[in-house]
Image 1 (tube, one colour):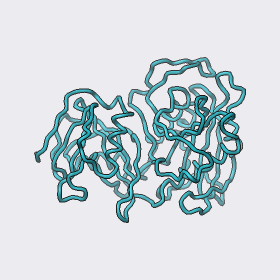
Image 2 (image 1 turned 90 degrees about the vertical axis):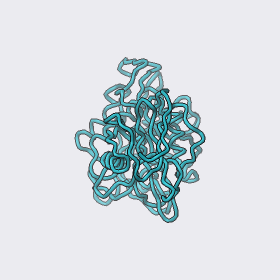
Image 3 (image 1 turned 180 degrees about the vertical axis):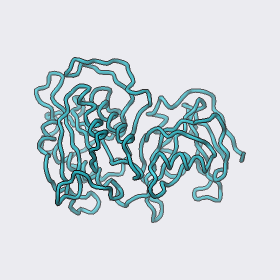
Image 4 (image 1 turned 120 degrees about the vertical axis):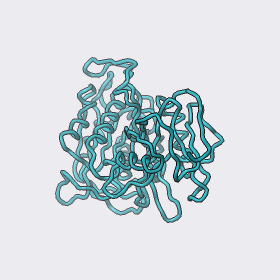
Length: 364
């Protein structure tokens, strides 16, 4: 994690404890590269910090998951039973991939192209009807040269067991969190088959991925929450007053997590203070790292619902808009908020109703 968390279940002499999971073979496969790689990684290892090159002493706990609903829920259940790790990396096989694929998003979708190993085949269903869930690290800033092969960053983890497992783990981490800004990070990594990636290269890739999960950024960032407040008119964005930093630019409203405050508490407080709105924070959608001058921030975009059908009362902003699914390309964005808006427009489709577009350009 970005701040030194309480270490649980770490054997003596190691600094970090991580959980690494793979899957049993499925769908006619005799082997599964994720199972082979994960079993080879168990025990104490020394990883390399991707930014400084310094050693990271890590105890890797491994778990091979069954390809059925029990396997998909296993990590979630362990978290609810009180087990904790500094990072969780789920690894799975992607038949169609030629290079590794880092997944940023777990979709609220289950559409199984073939039955799982228990004979279950769910088609056209949502997982919990609460929407897609994003990880809370930003792999777009990771050091590509540190990885042993090229890779892609994806927002489509499929609609099979891999996606179901990822969704369950991200959900559980939010449900069992404590007072740190965000829970320990979790990520899903899809590996191509052995005909596209050698086992040794796959092991190196997994180790590099774990090192980035434990040290995701070159500078320890301040944690900032940004609310994606959804309602029938779309979602809310606000314009910074001209006397503010990046004045006149548009952003998702929010602010810094205070000491001892988690993402959920910070989001509700910031929106209440800035806009006099009561929102219910649901879950993170994704994270964006940013350096501004000598300061480093990671902005966590949080899916929220509006508790009361009222309009914002502006204090630190001079305008607001409800952006519909069609978007508004003419807005000038602060920082990486334009990327966040594009992410919502392109990927979080359930959040984007196509109702009318409303705006206000005056203080209320």
